[in-house]
Image 1 (cartoon, helix red, strand yellow):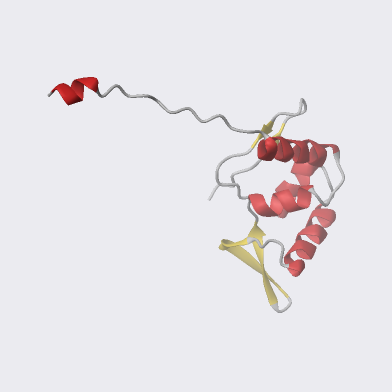
Image 2 (cartoon, helix red, strand yellow; image 1 turned 60 degrees about the vertical axis):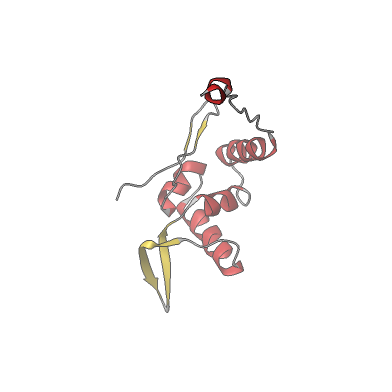
Length: 118
């Protein structure tokens, strides 16, 4: 199965697909941090029970535990607020803008006059 990844361009454009699935290496590359830093933060987040990985795709045995190989948007957001990098800052700003920007909902008005004449 192909991983569905978040992309952050050099000009600050953030692309988040609907069903994000990324492994530790891809998360480290996304935020431009070391693999070990990403892994350490993921394990810490899991131990605190804040967020868990997606074990439905695959997992790896580490000692007596099975850990996920893939992580969704919740984990990536949690990591973004724990690490310090330019790309993590861009992603945090994107999250804040998306969550605080009011959405305008438009409702189409349908004319029902002709239906009442019949």
